[in-house]
Image (tube, rainbow, N blue to C red; front, side, top):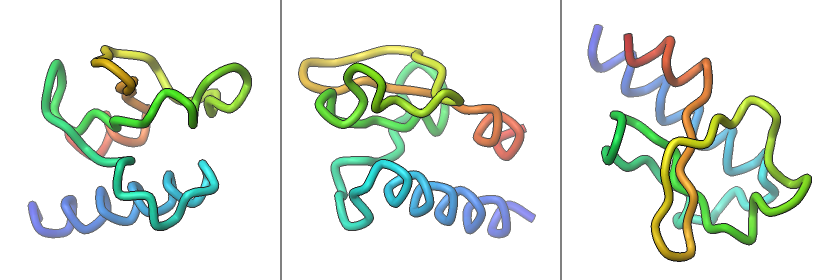
Length: 77
């Protein structure tokens, strides 16, 4: 069960990278800061109207923003 969820989270991360137009960008990754499996994205990829509407801002660090999405929340539960 856990392995299936981790596989789904991996697929979701790949899809998210593609949605942002950076399929091979390994700077888009999961971090476990404020919440488990937040997506951390370089600021330049989500500034202005580039941010997908389902991305819910959770926290930041210099040069990066972190987000949760309904899909991640569902998978983590």
